Length: 454
Image (cartoon, rainbow, N blue to C red; front, side):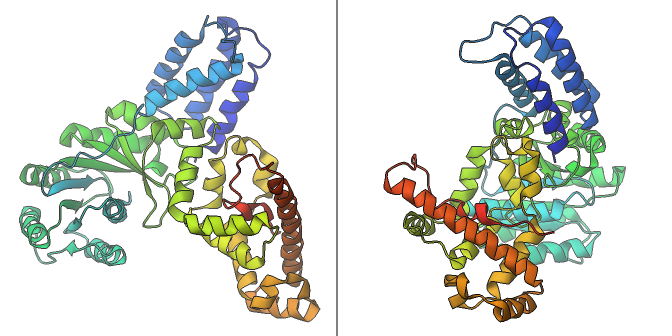
């Protein structure tokens, strides 16, 4: 989402290299470029003005620290202020009642129903027992969707299809929660294409009846400044406790994410980073600020790896790598683990400096490439995966037909894999002499051999 903003801001930082001190003269042009980058990213103009003024106040006249160059110091100032705009600290849910109640509100199409299920899945991992409650009485499809999603994650869903009073549904859902022993109610409310009085009155009645611990506004980050305006209106009428930003994996300019917390005064608590049911994460302002500035997000990358790659699998692969052994079966297993972590582009964006290297970005495979690789390897026999050298012309034709690809694609995969094997053997030599530098060879070893197809 922040690719364009990241590229423009990192270019600004380069202008400070070689300077001994940040002065008012050399900072004016940089601040002008940062201002333009933020405005082009659809950040609220009042937020931009306040942001620029604070950065200038902190930067002008500061002595360059011995361990830092001016560009590094300016990055730190911008990072700290950006983190302040985004919220400074992570904000968790306050679920102290029994059962605790979370009311999700927002416009139609913001991803509210899906977010209910994602939040339930997240809480379930934390040993909570959620109950999903369908209070969108106007859209039977929303009830069906919630029921389907609940079945996917094995979470009960409370539905009363013929009931037209949301407070009656809420009252009965509380009884159902007590019967099932659920300790969290996640209530899906009705939305509209725009704010209207009837919708607000209904949600206000639900709020008064349930007295929820959390009222979370679900905001579609793809809608830009309109999302900020709607969030502010919901907050004024309902006093929301936090915000969930959806579709952060999209290609919007990202201004809503940067503006919404300052305009509403409410913290961003979660971010939707994919359409998958596990695609909801706690929002970390410091990590998001680092990613926007092209500094990567190693902490999140490690957390994703720990969640999706078992220690046993990592150790097993590391042992093979240290012996210089790496087969297409291992390659396929690595590919499966990478896919569990989310879109490859998102994973790579967490690596510091990757977003600034255009050549690497154009060379890396996309989601279609990963699927093609997977199909080709799965069309091979076990012997072929263990020993690719036996794959001759007739075998290549059979594999290409079985995977719906061309023989040239098979050749490209095998060539890249052979290069990857040579790299693994070289790494194993360093490891034998204790020169690996503590590197975990069982991490994302397959990335180096993934080809990008034409």
